[in-house]
Length: 252
Image: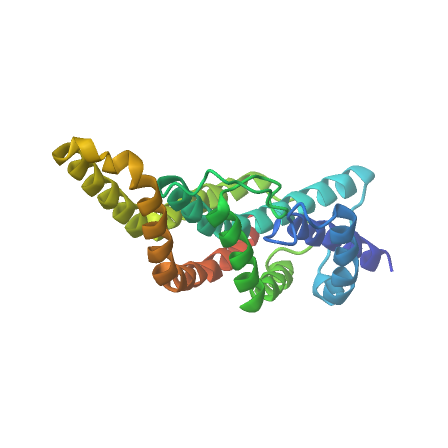
C-alpha cells in the first residue's frame, strides 16, 4: 500500500510536469488547475508502470524525489515544445520580412502578440499536432520512461541540458530552413523593386507599390508553400517525442 501511494505521488509529479509544458496543453489558454486535474486520472492509468517505485525512507527523500520528478517532466514537455515552436519562428521570420507584422494580434496559446502569419502558424500547428496524434505519442513515451527510470529515483536533472540545448539549436535551424526559401524570394522582390526605383527615380516604385507588392507576393508564395512547410515540420516532431526517452535514460 505504501509503495502504491509513493508511486502515485512520484508519477503524478512527472505527469503534471509534462502537461505543464507540452505543446498546446501547456499553453496559457489552459488553466493550471485543469492541467493538474488531467494529470490525476492519467496517473491512475499509468500507475501499473510504477511497479518498481523506490519507497523513500525519509521526508527529505520524498521531497527530493517529487522535485526531481517534476523537473524531469517539465524537461520532457519542453523538448517537444521547442520543436513545436519552430513553425511559429518560421512564420514570424517571413511575417517580418514580408511586411505582415504591422497588424499583430494576441495569441491565447502563447500569450504573446505575433503577426498574422505567426498566429495562423500557431493554430495550424496545434491542429496538426493533435490531428497526427502526437499528444498521444508524448503520453506513450512518458509511460515508457517509467520503465527506463523508475519513479522515486533522485534524478540527475542537470543532464536535461544535454538534450534541451541541442534541441533548441535544431529548432532554430529548422525554423530558418522552413522560412528560408520564402525569405529569399521576398528579398529578391525587394531587390528588384529597388533596382527599378534607381532606374526610374520619378516613379518611386519602391515606396509607392513596394510594400503592397511584397505583401501580395509573400501571401501568394505562402499559399503554395504552406503544405510542404507543414509536412516538413511534422516530419521533424517525432524525433523530439523520442527525446523524452533520451531524457529519462540520461537522468539515470
